[in-house]
Image 1 (cartoon, one colour):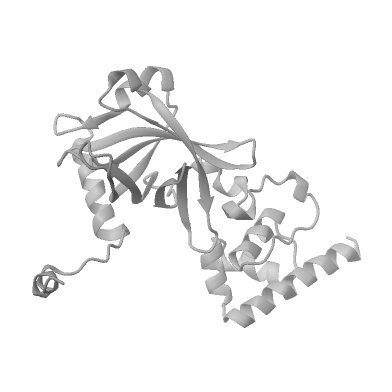
Image 2 (cartoon, helix red, strand yellow):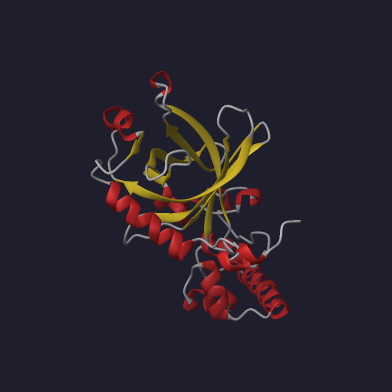
Length: 263
């Protein structure tokens, strides 16, 4: 093995250790925020051979520009703007999902749609969400947004920006056990027919689908579901878990709210 490769790995290790000392980050903490085990972190910090994509993601977890040796051109890597994530690390995200969230306009019902996450030719993950409205002629419309993944915080963000209007969905990472991502969606809805809008937040979860047949299933899957739907109870149960355990909302307690005098 050439000295240049050994020198490069040693130099990279020193840069990482310097940042860890500066920010008081332990090897255990770095393992947690990067998603790799402590043995891998020890090897990297010792200048030993690790996969280049691993080294890149550990660098990013510390806020360091990707430090890669050879073969970096063969790594599918998003721009730093989107998180600088490697496709291979998030390959499991690609595919189709059912989306469930509470209906903003009809109490008790749940909005169900379909989303596909895929690697785009622009070298990043994007998503395409299919949706329906009450107008049957628009059933099966879709829009496309970008996927942002920060190696530091371990969350997945789905962002759509359209002429200044923003919709942001923030989710936990996909877990193999239940194949669900949980989180919240922040958007805006129209108030009646007044052409005025208000900020709106809802719990949301995505359930991954295997071998999804878009042509056969999409039309029926885009709908508001109620008690008569076979997946209504499970969707309600999952949304309650999200609201109780996943998302944090900063509201005044009822007692505090009632004690405040109008301005």
